Length: 401
Ligand code: ACO
Image 1: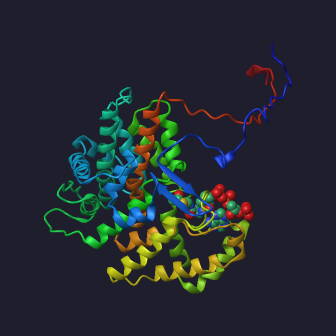
Image 2: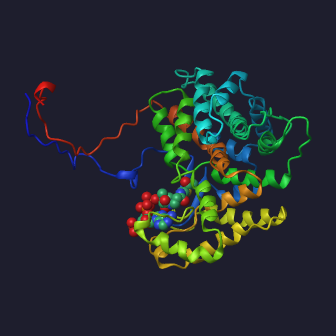
Image 3: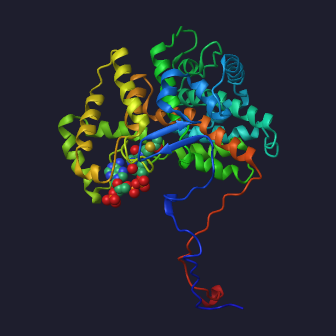
């Protein structure tokens, strides 16, 4: 019977951990992070060594398969990725349906989700060959889709993939080339993108990867699960931070305004945060930020770019690192503090920064989905809650209310 007035309170029966600050949702053999020591390993290898010695596709192979490829394995993998870069012609009409000023991340979320209508993969996930073909397709097609979103935004015709080009050169070509005009990808730009992609390839249970796992845990179509991850990446607290950093630097405008901006950041009432600073896991320098900082100086020098934004960023960094507010809260620059400056130097517009991140992180998403499905049987991700609503009560029919 109804227990009117009963207050349901199961606090204590479950762990209450908003934001999952101390809850592991899974076991995984892919990536290790020690946030206090500033350590990031993919399959046991320090990310700095991978960035120095390997290409993005080599690292993608490692993340997917657990070991670095030998020359033959790398060539086979590379060929497979090149073979799958094309998207179905029918997919173009999805782009056409978007409003002219739709954010490229909106297009990415929608179009990647629509791949589930082209590849009816639900149900085959137990087959490792099936998981492999999904992984290769997704890694191969995401640059084509990201570049098409760029072209749609700028009202230019789509450019088909050029499969003689390496992964990052192909992406730059699809974005910046126009029909009937020669376009040569600058190898410095392609190399810089390759390094950035290595640093962004995986980061264990971040919000977007956890989202892919959560959606995937229901046995949904894997392309739909990746689309869910892209949606989670978009927000400024996650992948959208690189875009937010550049917008913030624009807002500050000049080195002389830095101190005033910092005062605003420290005033909790303002709601303003120093974008590109702080991380849920790193309470020390983000190891990716250290590499990217160096890369940033290298790229600007090599491309002969004198960007006042970099000077502004350096000033912000210097003030923040010496400020008691930031020291007390262990807030250090994260990977996105510098990545935007490099993207800008490569001529990539601000609203494409997060899609770039999505291209790189696709490797991590597919690897985590494959690991979860391969480890099987699938356990649906289903957290509980602490109920804070009304006590049990009787319904009064509408006429008597
Ligand atoms: N600027 C100013 N203060 C900050 C910042 C910041 N960027 N980040 C955290 N703080 C403060 C908080 O106000 C809080 O202060 P309090 O203890 O006085 O209340 C304290 O530091 C702890 O912050 P939380 O929000 O509790 O930390 P959480 O781990 O939940 O958030 C996050 C991490 C979202 C990354 C946060 O640091 C942030 O918003 N940073 C800016 C956005 C950003 O750069 N995101 C990219 C993350 S990296 C990535 O996705 C690749």
